Amino acid sequence: MRYNAEHKRETRERVIAAAGQIFRKEGYGGAGIDALTKAAGVTNGAFYGHFKSKSEAFRTAVLTGLDELRQGIATLKAEQPRGWLKSFVGYYLGYKRTCGLDEACALPSLSPDVMRADDETRRIYTAELRRLIEEVAGGLSKRPSGTNDPGGAEERAILLLAMLSGGVTLARAVSDPSLSEQIAAAVARMALALEGPEDAPG
Picture 1 (cartoon, helix red, strand yellow):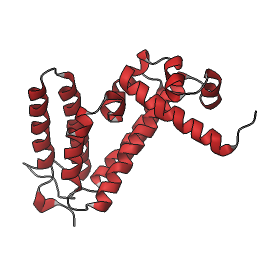
Picture 2: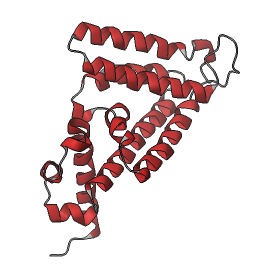
Picture 3: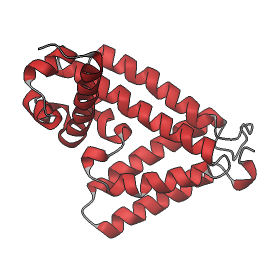
Picture 4: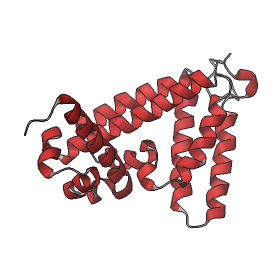
């Protein structure tokens, strides 16, 4: 039976979404092809019709996850030019800290496996991370670096992403809910301090 282009596109999107969820929850090593196909509701043959290997599916899941994060930030910036950062930090350290692992942000959940991945996956990750940094930096002020200044926009964007992803990782790992909240609150304060209200871009 031949499927039309729309059906193939929908199947591919379903497989990518399922792969992203499984890799987030189980890690690359714990996610087998059978688990991916079951989650996507497709056969092994259908899976291999879209991806040559598990590593290719992982690469695509990483790319998609980081792109979704970047687009989410871009949307916030467009809708809330002066308040996007506070909204983003609150959402990231709130919902993205407490949701199921399968819905977690790609940055903290998939990056550890990228470190062990092949060169092509790391190359794609690097390119997409650069785009993400650029997107965040574009919403921060361009104040010059000074003695007590955390740096220019790009440097602060890197700090912001590192603090948020690292903070969520620690907050998710602990078994004590109160400590998790404390970590989130501390990271939120420092993240927002990177961009004082007087520096918010107009």
